[in-house]
Image 1 (cartoon, one colour):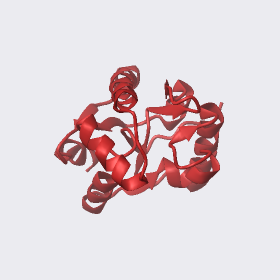
Image 2 (cartoon, one colour):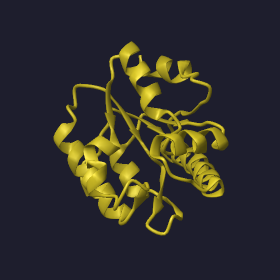
Image 3 (tube, helix red, strand yellow):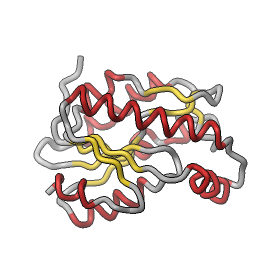
Length: 174
């Protein structure tokens, strides 16, 4: 097994919840380098279209860890924006392999949350396609439960971010 990181603050949430915007704001106010899992993975290479479905979640996470191992400088701190769960190729919510988080070894588990109806509208406006609100609700609920579990497993803070209120996370990263 690969050596784990010890300088990553992980922030998750479903597509369209606003992780990127919040991460940019936090990174600009703290000494953190913002990295998105999607950029590391080059999203178009792992998803068959713009539908946010992932063909092989396990191999995708292996690519993420490999990509991060080539990017991460152990002397710097990072804010990694990613997911606790993804939609598989059948549009079914699935947890990211726990081993991925074992290697990421996050110092904080944080999740961005919003009203699923707002997220659905945001995604539909952005992507010009329909999303199933029930599936997105199930995905967000699964992410919350998994994030809480991971926080307990690693004995690290669990922080929910709603309404752009990220002060608690910002204070921990300083």
